[in-house]
Amino acid sequence: MTRSCCSFKLNVIILITAASVLTFIHGHVLEFVVEPSDTVVESGQSAVLDCVAKASRHQATVLIQWLDEDGSKLTFVGDLYRSQLTNGSLYITSVIEEQRLTGTYQCMATLPNVGSIVSRTAKLKVATLDGFVEEPSDLTVWAGERAHLSCLANGVPPPRMRWLKDERPLHIDRLRMTVLPSGALEIDEALPADQGTYRCNASGPSTYLLSRAAMLRVDPPDEEGALRPAPPRFLARPRAAVYIEGQNASLDCAAVGNPRPLVTWLKDGYPIDMNDLDSRFSLVGTTSSLRITVIKEQDGGTYQCRAENREDSLDASALIQVQVPPRFLKKPQDKNEFPTKDVELECIVYGVPEPKIQWYKDGELVKYSEYYKLVNGYNLKIMGLMSTDSGIFQCFATNEAGNIQASASLKVITDMPKRRPQPKVGGAKKARGGGAGGGGGLSRTAFTALRSSDAGAAEQAAFARSALSAVVASSAPSTDSAAELL
Image 1 (cartoon, rainbow, N blue to C red):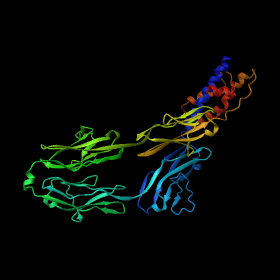
Image 2: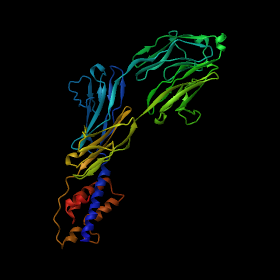
Image 3: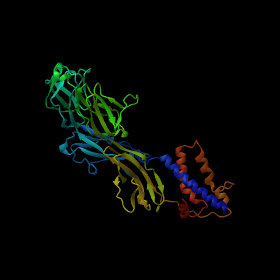
Image 4: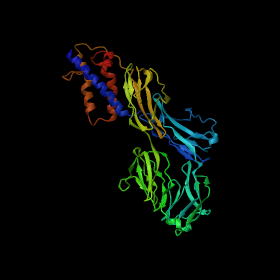
């Protein structure tokens, strides 16, 4: 009786180990190698969205399909603009907004008799130049003072900014002139020769916009007003903005006064140290505008530009927000489970703002119920497994900064081998292989194969499959009892 009990326990261990070996060998059943990415093209130009999926087996049978903004599958029947290339990529011959070709796309990869997965969403946009947010205004400064002419335009992709003086391209004197990341023009120690009419030119891939004209007047320094003390006065103030982590940020600030104001920067009331060699904060050229290289989440806050001289001190502040695209802290893991069990697929995500979590099964959105539950804000809990729950589950995380997905396969084990008849007492020892090892002829071979560093993946896989079908055949309790123990 003791030997039979030990034999059963040993076989249970082998069964669990065999399942682990299969999982190790196969890895993810189906996963994306390349997902489509956000794309911007000129109106009328072609576009390609790539999608490549990898299967642990039967790679040649993987089917790639494309979904539109509504989640409907593209059939390409009668579609004059869209087609699917032999490598699975989506090809659009001419992107025209009027034809409703822009928007979001996803690709779906299907492995027959196994399941499906869908990619992250990718946005296809036509390049646009929306217009000016700020344009230059007339300005009068004393010779030797700083001059700042604002210019800010919106567009996708961000427009390139150039300047004209008296309707001709401005020659940039790099010792005194700087075109800021925002597009503004700043002139340090203005000269009488700088006087004139200025415009900024915002250009996109296929179009451009000209701002209104602004007159810069430079008065000579020998006039009485140039020597009169004056408190600081802002020519440019920082603007509130939202950035995505990893982008470069800039905040404009320029001030004049007599004597010339000293400009410093503070974050949340504390001075910013720009002398640290590892600092990502610096001034733009010879200006007093602030640049933040590769902005991080902790860089969000209230920034103050302080201009001060012996006459007065003046502050201008702006709130900078940093969004963080979703990232996985823990991805769902492949699972093999028995029917009627409760299973929880874990998915821990971080992002700012907090990502929205959605679960998909075989490419279809999971509708939460008493059977499928969202627990702890992220995890999917399935109450009482059934055979129909087998498939590929995906955790999608989305916020304003981006979206990501991760998949895991769930296998509900329903094809347990039937119990074989017990051998006769006289032949039991021989049937099991005899010897002091006991526990059935499979045990010694099993552990030898599993422990051998020379055993190849194919041999381990063969062993695991044979173990699954042979373990219960040994002298052990019934299959139902084995399932309960597991």
